[in-house]
Image 1: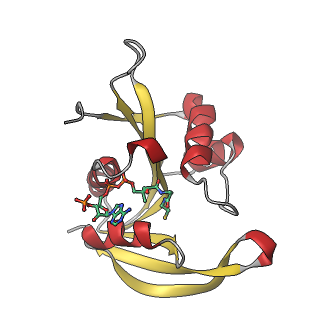
Image 2 (image 1 turned 30 degrees about the horizontal axis):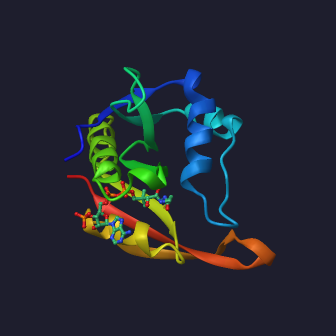
Length: 162
Ligand SMILES: CC(C)(COP(=O)(O)OP(=O)(O)OC[C@H]1O[C@@H](n2cnc3c(N)ncnc32)[C@H](O)[C@@H]1OP(=O)(O)O)[C@@H](O)C(=O)NCCC(=O)NCCS
């Protein structure tokens, strides 16, 4: 069994790390990448936060970053903005833990519901979100641009946090 992971909020000092985790997680051809500046912009928004998951290091005492989740609270609503787990670390419950911890922080911040957008061609993430009680409530046509200018719809999903 894998050793327990740790999850903690990070601030703007971690934007380079977050960008590298994002690039390593969103690794399909045509996936959109978030730069360090994109994470800095997100963390600069009111109500935004980012959680980092780390696992005990295999090479030494330093914990290794393995995943992240970025969210924002705006009044009674919250939004899951981005989520990624390294390919080598998947299917061990890291994303589930990141989302549950994020939902807890959003509730503490006053949110009563959470929204997210997920690409129609990303069934893995859809299964993850459905397993956590999210339901599709909308669709944004052609929201994501893939290779060769192929457009993919975004599904808007929602979950009650009360
Ligand atoms: C989606 C992603 C974050 C899942 O991370 P993860 O840590 O592997 O997910 P978890 O181990 O917490 O999975 C929790 C549940 O989600 C579902 N799930 C996750 N991966 C799945 C897969 N490959 N196939 C089927 N169900 C899956 C299962 O219900 C799983 O529970 P179970 O393992 O007890 O059956 C990860 O695959 C990833 O980073 N993908 C690329 C980036 C991305 O798509 N981000 C989301 C964009 S909206």
